[in-house]
Image (cartoon, rainbow, N blue to C red; front, side, top):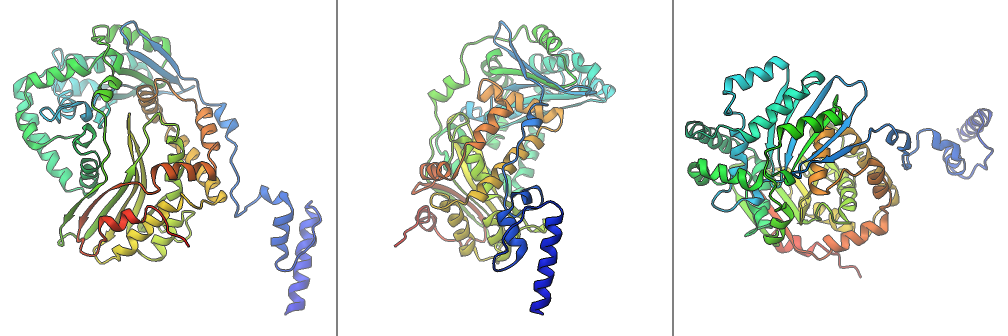
Length: 500
């Protein structure tokens, strides 16, 4: 058998050499392994060692983002896609729940609902029919720092889309009857959200991590506020925060920049140009991170939901890109997908092979002056929560001590691919344009972003982990049967290693 293997190995080597591979010395062991170690030609084919991917050709095909500032401070930005037949046009506003007060918390989300309840020139029916006749799609969303109204339409309907967006933003019909009807809708929505564990967990996580500061407020607001908000409250919020310098009109796909600028200058000419910026409001009332935890112990729940977070980086923080790579290193896992034990993420391997959870994901949430970085996991109530907690803390804190070069290369490739995938269509591009102009003041070119990602190495990750993770306070939120979940001290103690 040994002689047969030796002959087979020689035949394989001769075949490889006949195909143009360099002559190599066969070391003890598998000849193929020796060939991979000695011959760089193998990098052309499948290899267990990740190689940095060169996106130069792809980056050269990405259209330029053009930005124009109007006299009133409104910014108009667009990216034209050649041969596109559809477009996404939207208005991104630097306004969200963090700019509210305890009294009017929920106003930004309330206004999102009211935008589609008719204007001074269009009834609800007229608005809906007009959008449907175009075959378009009109929608909106609200976050803690941003509100967006956008439309997806065909290329010939871009002027109509801009006009409709202008109408619902500036001429919304805030009549008491519509407001009262919408109260019940929002209250029902709040009940539905309370049935979604992930929403509940992250609301409570923000409330404990940023307690007594603006980011601790929920987006929907408390139920008492929804019942008491009136027309004057909503009108005051619009007058205060819906100002030209804090708004961006962004378009992508079948749009012509000059045309979009002309349309916007007419449609939004009457916006107030109040010089107060969101940064002024952030400096006045900054977010303050507090190491703490909140536990919702309910033994009747079939699942345990756990979120562990450290204070993260702001959008403009130099270390924000490194945290993006670290998030990719931690990865994600869902037992329903089948992957896990063979995943590139060591955390996913441990979770899957030991059946510690049903799913988990690493998250890296950025805000103007702070952020949250951590892991959210969902496990059966019968799971070993002590081992689950150990794996989460061990894998997070490990980045302050030991990070493999191959893992970093793989994570950087995955991150760059994710950034490209997220902008396959006009909607993703328009979202990226609007958000970046609000948080950075400009659209960061992909070449620059990829260069920042490529600059991350093991030393960078260790330094950033030392800043954000090593011996730092953390915020924890858990819900379910928590009898076997370790206490806060257990988690806090494992933000560093004791090694002898």
